[in-house]
Length: 361
Image 1 (spheres, helix red, strand yellow):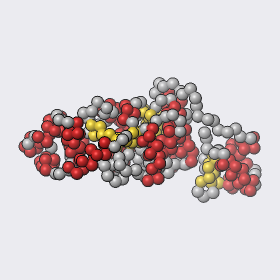
Image 2 (cartoon, rainbow, N blue to C red):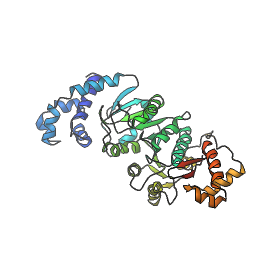
Image 3 (tube, rainbow, N blue to C red):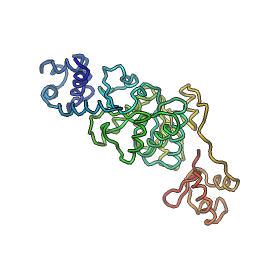
Image 4 (tube, rainbow, N blue to C red):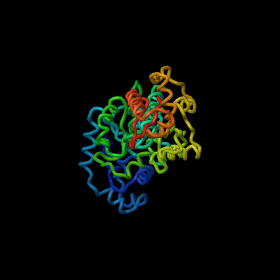
């Protein structure tokens, strides 16, 4: 059988609604290659899966979807990997539910490279976003592939941090590989395709259905040696990724934060459950027994003493002008002028409600 015919059979197996991963693996175990599944009679299939699914498997016409997928895979940079391919990511074989087939845009070899997942809130604080960028930048420079989900917030910051130097990154998405969600990350997705890889288990054209995103988290965890959570609320989807990573025997890391911040609750919960508390990328590298990169990202611009005093008064929690004026003994007008300069230099971020937060670099 030709390579295209073999891939077409794999696609047919995965495109039948209702025949999920467990059923697919049961059929493959019973009959071998997908071609043999479709040559088996209805009675034989009913011995493995429910009769309604067996009949659907043999009668449902998905020829148009198969043709579209084969055409997509012929385009430059696109590929489809099956459980039967040598290039299928070995790390995913340790997952409880490895996908029978994945769609890939970019560099397939990166899926077998040592990776680290960086995940967190879609609505992070400025400090959290800066932390995700800095961690990814340093860890990518140390040779790790940064794996995340292409979502807004921490995910996007992690991808950008990895790409800011010579590092690489892998995005596991919850839509078809021919779609970009959210649309605001279109340019980022293009950059990832050029330097890294975008992976999806969902058929082409699949929209951003809410149920798909928790499901794709197991692949983020599965492709990584460890999972770093930067900021996460108590009920964050990032905690699902961390739990899946722990269940798969991966290391789980969490960045602590303010006891007053809702976005620290999830990380603190993970730390109480045994996640490694990390304050720098070096903590992660030491746990994974990897050497630190020879060159580290640029340090923050040095500050004059007056600005240093203001930053010390500001602390690391969000703070309003009145509180800061009481701490620093400066007038609100003087504070606003200094804070504006510090914001332009990247040392402070303005928040809703007239508050400010110090950024570390």
